[in-house]
Amino acid sequence: MCGIVGAASLRNVTPILLEGLKRLEYRGYDSSGLALLSDGQLQREREIGRVAALESLLDKRALKGNLGIAHTRWATHGKPSKLNAHPHLSSASVAVVHNGIIENHEPLRRELKEMGYRFHSETDTEVIAHLFDHSYRQASGEASSARLLKAFRHTLMRLNGAYALGIIHIEHPDRLLCARMGSPLVIGEGSEEHFIASDPLALLQVTDSFIYLEEGDYGILTRDAVDLYEMEGPDPTESEPVTRPIVRYEHGDQVAEKGDYRHFMLKEIHEQPQALKATLEGKVSDEGHLLTSILGPEAETLLANTRQIQIVSCGTSYHAGLVARYWIESIAGLPCSVEVASEFRYREVVVPDDTLFVAISQSGETADTLAALRFAKNAGYLATLAICNVPGSSLVRESSLRLMTNAGPEIGVASTKAFTTQLLALLWLTAALASSRRSGPNTLSTSGLVEEMRAMPRLVEQVLELEPAIAQLATRFADKHHTLFLGRGPHYPVAMEGALKLKEISYIHAEAYAAGELKHGPLALVDDDMPVVTVAPSDDLLEKLKSNLQEVRARGGQLINFVCEQAGLESGEGITNLVLPKVSDILAPILFSVPLQLLSYHVALVKGTDVDKPRNLAKSVTVE
Ligand code: AGP
Image (tube, rainbow, N blue to C red; front, side, top):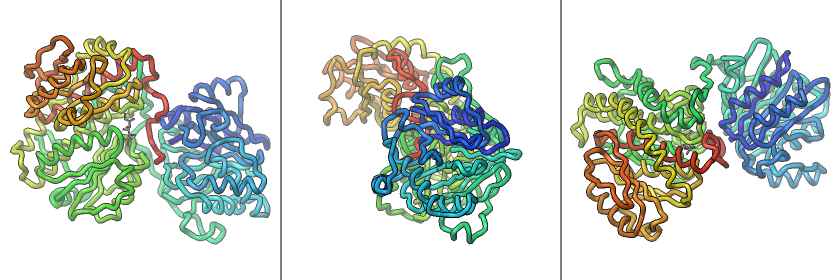
């Protein structure tokens, strides 16, 4: 994770770096820092905690400079502390900011110590600073770009792992080095100024023109020029720079504000009716036809030729994939496998003929999902499809087909509107697959499905009205340490998502089980101190689920059931039912996700946790 930003300009870059850091805080928020070159001095400030803490520090000690780098951290190597915060220095000449993980940092650290370098942090990044300093000293000669690049290339060749890097050197007051391998990095082009950042979002206040670095790109930028080279290519002194296109960012500067909401998460929960509408926009014609060409070139033929689906994703996006498996198999009649990306990427995968690879990611920058996609591109899949919320993200740019969720920026670490819009996009994909095959075990027509999807925003609005009742219920969790979530069929992954939400933001241990599995072990945990949350819409499995609930009640378990109007479940001692509007079986997983989000939000309020930035987490997981 971590966010990096850098600038080479004629003006003082401190405000640009600070604003960039604030916009990158979703990538990590345990400490932040910046380093500037001015009047031949390398100056650095670092602070533990949020970017606001660094900003207060800088209010007291105004740092100014035309060249600088900055960083917001999500700790991988070494605890969150001021000493471990970036930038890291070497010999008071080099400053480095890094996003990624250097896997061979231990042998490098030993080697550098033997050379006499002293380490001041526990981070893997500090080896880069010393290694670069050493390489620069070895590459004798005048303080030229050629010497810098030679030393930089030599440094990069020694690193194993993932990195996006920004480096400045005291002898080069107008040169900023950058590199990308496994972690995203863009260059922003201004008027007589250049910038780097982990995400264009960090720079939208100063530019809308970007160069997206390719894997293995490294180079040097000044106010007026950008020279990029490829690690695969020859030495920079013997080759011309490579050309990368300048891309205009056309999605506007969507800086999300909390408005009157207490937290971004609550705002994002309440934005779901609008986000769901936006997700459908452009995907369905006024006459109710699915506009499959929005997926990309030859989408129709590809869908018609698809015989199997492989979904890969992480966390909440993985849960969306698990729900979709039920739809794809029952509605489109296609076999579908779903796997977490961190497992898939290291498995010996057998790819069945005509399999469509689908990667789901809100951010489009999740390291494991991206690695799985990159593997899939050469593994014999029919095509790769990204389902994503961030236009211009690596996942979107690198997939052959794309399906945008259009939920708008999601800031709260706990994913809410991204999840329900992913579900809607996956239902749309299911309908597209079904109609391209014109068959499938389910007789639901495309127009029937479209009607269902269009009804979704209104139904979610009704569910949001349950908030006061859910807030009341949340007080019961004040002294609880463990919770079970139960569901059956597609509501088992909905229960998994509910449990993930609760543990993420309230720090209560929550486990989800397929309700039928209860008696195979977890029932042993149930007693009157254990709230059991069930997702119980009126579908074919409700009667089976009711028997499982009896098993819980018989052991004193406290049931909190989310049910449909027609469920026929009575509230009573140890049983609380929250009644949702009547909904079709197909839409139920989307609708039933919403009260679970509200429940975890209100439990977190009761517990007094930092809802939008829960401990140990970050919004975008760009390390494996
Ligand atoms: C969700 O609440 C999480 N914060 C997390 O599980 C997230 O869904 C996961 O890291 C995947 O992120 P992505 O969708 O951006 O790839």
